[in-house]
Image (cartoon, rainbow, N blue to C red; front, side, top):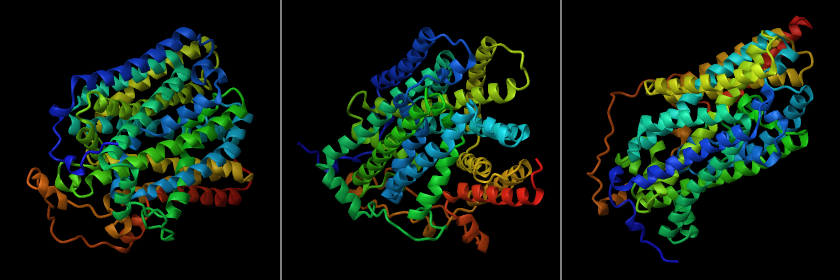
Length: 549
């Protein structure tokens, strides 16, 4: 195998005009056209005789495609851009999530799925009315809708901004194209089109990772040298059994906190629940969840290996410290243009892979929003509507929420530093919702008063610690970022190309006990705390109020 000397990479600042060509835009456009074609195909092939044919594919899907759809919609553009940067800066400990995925899938498949199938529900929040009352169903649906719209707008805008700043890729052109195409195939083909488009987009995401990994191995002379660099840089230290809940990533935060966080998505979030409820039998639904576990492992290992590849390339010349990129989520696009920019179409493939993560997440959100609107807000109050009318309303809801999410992307562009806070808040909300489902399943005496009290308590606690940690960042000894170097940049004359300065803001603000402890709790425990507070308060109130609703 021929090798390229390591010195050849990062030899000059990447310029978008030099590396992003017309062919790259063609590759991106091809991805959008194929996605739209899948929607048109299922619109032509399938006749939606009732709204459930549209929203849950008539419960006729088999396990394997649903498994890939679950994986694709779970792994958004945040995974493609964020996870490699996380590994580059903090090491491969992130890979321990593979264990929490196992726990999450087993609990979802063996506890939540059988209940949903026995009740034959379409919206996950129907369970809340059957177990408690209609008001809790409406509360759960409303919380899901507001935060899904917020999150979806951010998922559309954030990767577009990162790619635009590094590659010069059209910002608003890509945002609008993504939103319009996604809404188009969701509206035409329903859930079946969404699932099969996710299968296509999953393959693109993996292709994007593989191009980076393979090219790095060629540059560095094999995977052994990549892993050697990672080991010498401390990136392969993955086992840390420190029990402190304030440490950002340890074995316990990743396993315990990760399991609670992912259960809030797979167990009770309509975007995921709707997929495995669309399977033709309970066996196929369980098969989908367990095959999805393999898909999660593949994506996680690819993202982690991409991060280690990035470190191997930039171990002596960190573009973040040097100021060549402004934020960690720009590192991956920068790397692609740096090591693959001379290969026409390959940067376009990576952009297509990134936007595939966006499309899969947005399409699942739009379809889920339409489902809960029809099932929780329309059907219970307009009982005279026919199945054909409900099917048309479902299609209309897809168009409506596609437009709303695009509008939210425009609003996200004005939010600036609040973007990460909004993402944290979205994660926190899954905890209280998971808590009231758990209360209903695990405690037969749990009642509506207990569930509502627990939901409010868990939400307040989650918001408190989440927003507090955003505005009062944990100190470095809690987050443990690994060292990055610019010692090797001098040979490339880059030390003055984009000088990096540290702004002085005066004396370090005094941190109180609550700042150093409560606000320094690992972000992975936000959902855990919210869930536990919800369940504990729910149990206490339920016991004190007896069997009253």
